[in-house]
Amino acid sequence: MALHPPASPTEAAASSGRLASVLAGPFLSVVVPAYNEEARIGRTLEKTVEYLDAQPYSWDMIVVSDGSSDQTDSMVEAFASTHPNVRLISYKPNQGKGNAVRVGMLAATGERVLFMDADMATPPEEAAKVLDHLEKGADVVIGSRPLKESELEVRQPFHREAFGRMSNTLVQLVGVRGIKDTQCGFKLFTQNASRQIFSRCKFKGFSFDMEVLMIARDLGLKIEEVAIRWSDQEGSKVVLWRDAPKVLSDLFRMRFMGKARRLALRDDANLSGG
Ligand SMILES: Nc1nc2c(ncn2[C@@H]2O[C@H](COP(=O)(O)OP(=O)(O)O)[C@@H](O)[C@H]2O)c(=O)[nH]1
Ligand SMILES: [Mg+2]
Image (cartoon, rainbow, N blue to C red):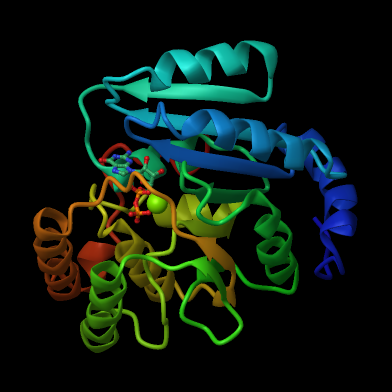
């Protein structure tokens, strides 16, 4: 492995070529959680693959269908049949975004692993930005919307943005201090950080983002928050009155369970392999 952090993703990709032959994984794995995404996943696959194909590094993509009951699975399977580095993991029943992301992250063999939402609220080109920060020495790089430099092309509806800001104040108090946006669906990890974190994640719903960051902090990993482009998409699966109370009660549970229990490995954790 390189002793000095590579200067650019391209350089990193070159050195990862050597590493990849040892690990047999690509430079970048992209994980996309998908729950009933037939209306949005097609375009996301097209655009993301178009972007990744133009990059100098090797990559693969895993779509995790979390108990979808629409055409998501057959659409991803049809796409994967003509794109060998795209694959579908599917299970039933629906368990929540956190579970889908965890399953995908632990299956991913890339030297760096990115998860992104199925609706491309953050476009795949932003990968370059977060990769860059990882090369500079971070273990976890998270996309962020409320930073001054963030480009919010289409903002979230008022009630979502207001809830986001409110819950962030709470998160600052009970959870992960110093992070402005815990919930953005665009986060990049080194393979090692991803494995260390996701083998410990126990929350299955939308609160998993906070758990990921708390565990990363507990492990002493370096988290960096980076302004990204965000364009809110129609068709959100989040129902605020249903999901918000759960997210908040989970936040308190994960805070008060204490570091030792947060860091306990899951029973099914496999730290060494995929
Ligand atoms: N696996 C899983 N993913 C979900 C669920 N609900 C939403 N998602 C995924 O989470 C991502 C973000 O969801 P979205 O509805 O766009 O949320 P929003 O943009 O925060 O309003 C998308 O990739 C969804 O497919 C769920 O219950 N299970
Ligand atoms: Mg969305």
